[in-house]
Image 1 (cartoon, helix red, strand yellow):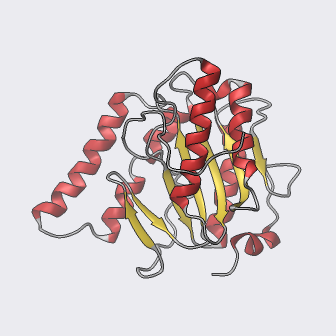
Image 2: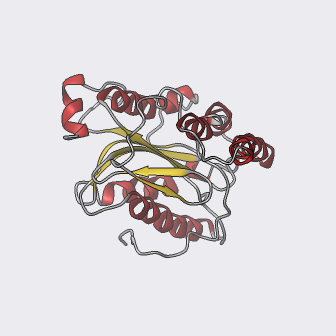
Length: 250
């Protein structure tokens, strides 16, 4: 069965904050207004550009405890409240902080194996990997991906005519249905929200790919099968001369 990008429900997922972006990936140049579309789905602003390259993280619904989510939400609300009291929109620095301030907290819990970690199930991990690969070089070009026990990282360039929201929804909707069938259950599988970081330069692309390739080792997962880097037999190495072709013209 092929992943279906049509707008079907994502297994009754509940909203919350971001999946988080590693500090090694975040913090580079901010896109200029007019170059991107800023889409706000109620929790995180999503910066989208035609045929852009992204570092994406999405995670299982039970991968973060409520106490962590409450802490993250409190920090975000404090920033927004200050801006509202001054009757102004969030500044660029505040928007960046809203996106990145929770990263160390989120990384800690994700890599510690919080939740049921249903992606340790080889059949489910393979389903997710196959779904990511299915439309490679048709709707997008994959540079790197890793299916961790409770979350997924992807570095991907969208091809013309395909949006970030469409592609991520297709991955999550299809795999949620198949995973719930395999587990014999219903309800949430993925968290509704996901994190996407617009990759702006070669340095960011290199850091993103290396982060994905090394994530299993950093989480003490031995002989982890569910990690891949484009064109490389060994996922830990990315040839620097190939980076410009991966990013494409800007």
